[in-house]
Length: 269
Image (cartoon, rainbow, N blue to C red; front, side):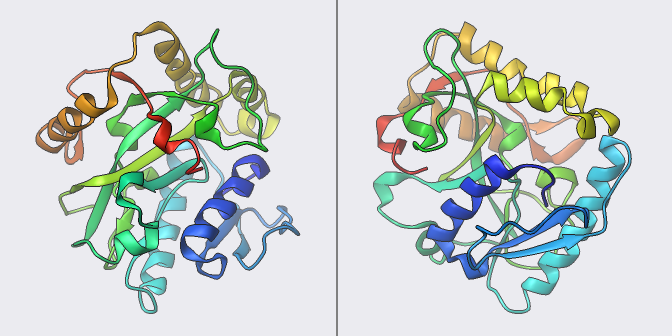
């Protein structure tokens, strides 16, 4: 579900369209004042009534709606991926499989997660993002984040928690070959525009977006660790450690590890 975000929606439809087929994409516009984009291709883009209120309240309304929509889609599909417009579920490139091929082969009961990588702009090393180039050829650093290790893929009707961060009443499982790349912090200037956007200001998003910007500070100020050693360790940590008041949400136990994203990902998206 998206509102006022053409930049990421273009990339979202392009990436998932290639992976799954555009006709299998469902985008719900948050507000009937949002125009259906002419460039959507075969994607199903549906304007809906606005879910308006505080950040927490509107998030809850949106995820309840999306849980209902996913339940309807599961009458026709084996799996549904619920994901934000700036998030991209990626298969380990060495597997040489599309997202569709890989998910068709693995167990998902009732959900599966990719390890969260919160990608940020490294100030001093990386310039403004160029939308005509792949993101991961321009951004090479990310924070290993339990916040983005989401229960994105489901195989039966469930109730997601806000933001797809958990499935209520069920455990989670992190797949060894799946990653969820979050790109909300890939460009500082873009993030500043979002923080000062009147529509977002009116609905209390300024603090939330400012908090996101800390990813850029962490990425720019910490030495990057080696991907191949850090990923298996953090996958084990998040699988074992739970958030204090939510046993079915992973935790990094305070680790804020910055990793260098390998070159094999640069042409993925």
